[in-house]
Length: 410
Image (cartoon, rainbow, N blue to C red; front, side, top):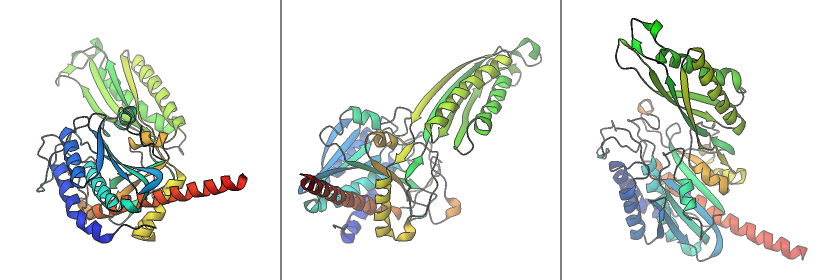
């Protein structure tokens, strides 16, 4: 079995860190990753890796062909940033006002480029093809970038047998990964509720229908979906993340807009929450004389790992990191566009431990002070490369066994 060369890994590490910092310094929002895409293309060219472009506008597909025919393994990294003003005082802090790589996509892209370098250096030893998938617009739920890339034919010439993805994870220390069979991340839906009343003077509430009071009742009532409607053994989170309403202290508001998200694992809980949300909102506001418009947008489906390939990641990770490198982890109700790939292709998604040394200063994903431990980058590069190598040989063995069984039957 081919094993990733540690000396090659050391050789590429400075490039990976530099690239990650370069991408962090100049982040771009979903669908606008034009310069990010150019930087990735330039680095692939430097490393002699063939690639194609034109997928979901800014997506890039690197192609590494082994010396002999075999299966096809796809590796994915997302490349977009978030509309967040960075508050870290690092030398490579964001130079684009109001935009930040607060979810680690800069690291994902840099690690995949490094992975591509390692695999390209040993391609003469590989049976089959490895695809490097640089995906835009992961943060743009419910549309995302995975589905548009597939619609643009990213897999037309090289249909993958399996696909893998990784995500930096600040809850895990460096040297550990999170992997599990089945659901690892949840359905992520969002909603927008516009409550309409009638305004007036704060001293004369009897002449109005106070939209803020109606909104307050709606916010409280919606939590009964979690506590009283869905099976308590079927996890669900409903969060109101944004409230807009009112004009000034002495004016009763005629309109309030609520925006939020519903997170679930199962489709039963998802559909039940959606149905109850509509019912609760309309009945609650009507009881108060108000009206409501509800928009509900189904986002990314749950990220469901194929058991065989989740175990594959675990086996490889234990070989690279040791048995303690794969602790038991609970799933997360965070959403992930990688799920759209897994609906079409077998594969698995895992979390890469990136916790900083001063754990008390570790901020979560999507925080303006989020930081990751760059010591984890070499682990992410080595793991993704070794996962791909092991998968190619697993596919080759499977094909040989299939042919032998067919010959025996004949």
